[in-house]
Image (tube, rainbow, N blue to C red; front, side, top):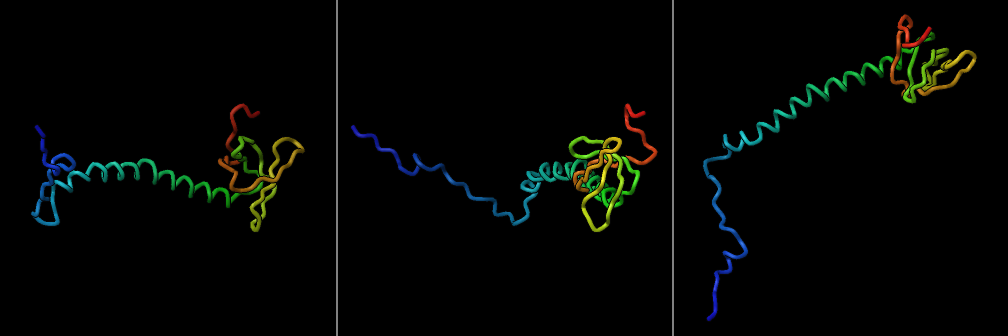
Length: 121
C-alpha cells in the first residue's frame, strides 16, 4: 500500500491573503510604536547629551590659553604654557621644567585656572 501525501502541504504552509483594508493599518503602526519610542528615548537620554559634550570639549580645546590646567587622554595632568592658533600642538608643562607638546584633540578635560586638582598642593 502506497501512502500519497499532497506535495504542497509538505513543503509550504498555507498562505493567507493580506488584509486589503488599505495602505494605512493601525495594527501595523502599533507594532512599530515601541521601536520608535525606544529610539526617541535613546536620542534624548544618550545621543543628544553626548553630542553637546563633544561640542563643548571642542570649544574648550580651541580656546586654550596659558595657565589652563588640562588632562590628556593618557591621564597626564599639565599646565598649558604656549598655544598657537595655526597649530594643533600645545606646549604643556607636566612637571617643573618638563615641557611636552600635546595634540589638542588628545585633551579630554580642561580645568579652569582657579580649579584645584585632587591631591594638588
